[in-house]
Amino acid sequence: MCGRFSLRTPASQVAEAFGVLPFADLQPRYNIAPSQPVAVVRHAQRELALLKWGLVPSWADDPAIGYKMINARGETVATKPSFRKAFKVRRCLVVADGFFEWQKTEGKKQPHYIRLKHDGPFAFAGLWEHWAREGQEIDSCRRQ
Image (tube, rainbow, N blue to C red; front, side):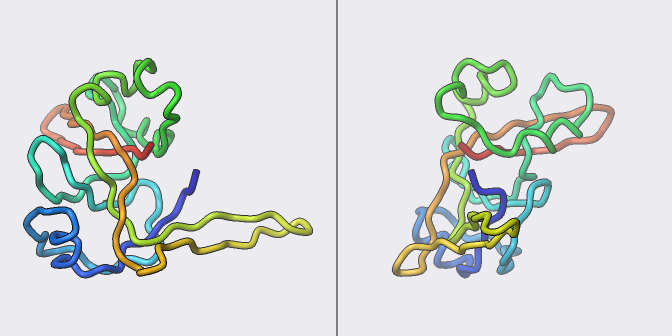
């Protein structure tokens, strides 16, 4: 599963592609990494929002757990305690227009950038959570 992706598409085009209102502060990003804000379309609200990439379950004591939870396996997403509830009620689309996969050759890692032929936006299936403790709140997500 990829650990880096891009979203260079203008907010108005993203909004049109997913049938949501545009997000004013959506800036082009070429190398989105875990723990950074990512654009998602939350299903129930039908809204475009920025969430932290790295799921922090609502029951977690420490939000640092999100650093370990950036991707989910389709085979276990419905049963793992860390995201079982989010799978039932808090699904989202993680918006991107390209992603990186790495190939190891001769001891070196070579990145390959993958995008659609028409270079438009697409989405990864995702889950999102709301975490709150002592006045701190985090909306976070995880890709499948």
